[in-house]
Length: 123
Image (cartoon, rainbow, N blue to C red; front, side):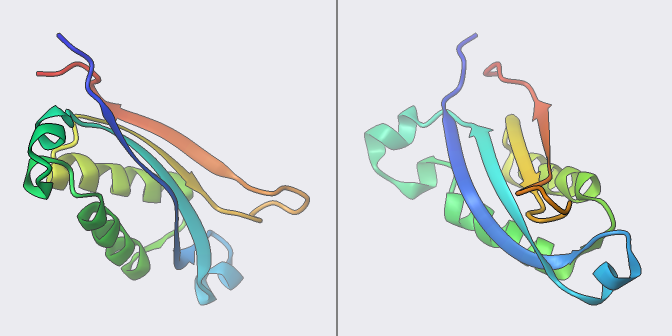
């Protein structure tokens, strides 16, 4: 079995309700997504047709809409929900998602979770 190529979306920023403290439930904060998704790009590389690849604009728009409308306590839960969208709706066989909450801890630049789901082997 061959390994699949990867499509990346980096630094996607979205404002949402995220956090466990009362004050966090009353404001919108920025989360940042960095995604790496396994995908065989050879067909699109030959055809030069968007229909033959993973439409990263459609992926981004779907996740932005979902995150903006959501309200999670933990970045872990939001990351899992985003991973499910990628796998279930876009049929991504493997993905790595880093979900960051910049400034969540005083004195730190960023706090994040990094999750991987699916299989890297082509079916």
